[in-house]
Length: 106
Image 1 (cartoon, rainbow, N blue to C red):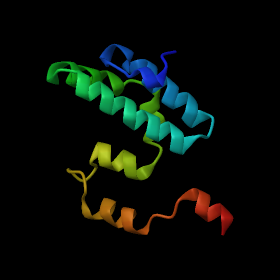
Image 2 (cartoon, helix red, strand yellow):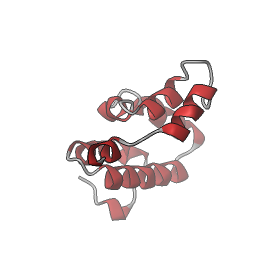
Image 3 (cartoon, rainbow, N blue to C red):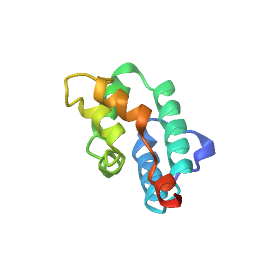
Image 4 (cartoon, helix red, strand yellow):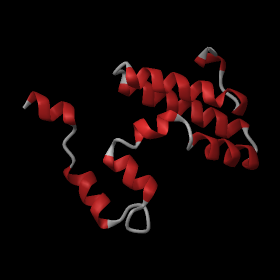
């Protein structure tokens, strides 16, 4: 796998997704999401508009999408079940959400 510090390009994009998925499955959620964000930012900065759109389309079939969409906020923000992102129900969920980790410790 590619060394994260070396930076990512579109050609390395699926490697970044694979690494983030492995970290998520290992329970290292915070690190996985931080690294994924950084990798996607690097890819977007280096890609042309067309390359980025093509990459994003390919990301939707990657297994990490299913994992990320287990979170109802991420899922509804992506699927827009009421027609647009940021609808009233999603905003209510954001303001009243209690993370599972906090629920377990209560």
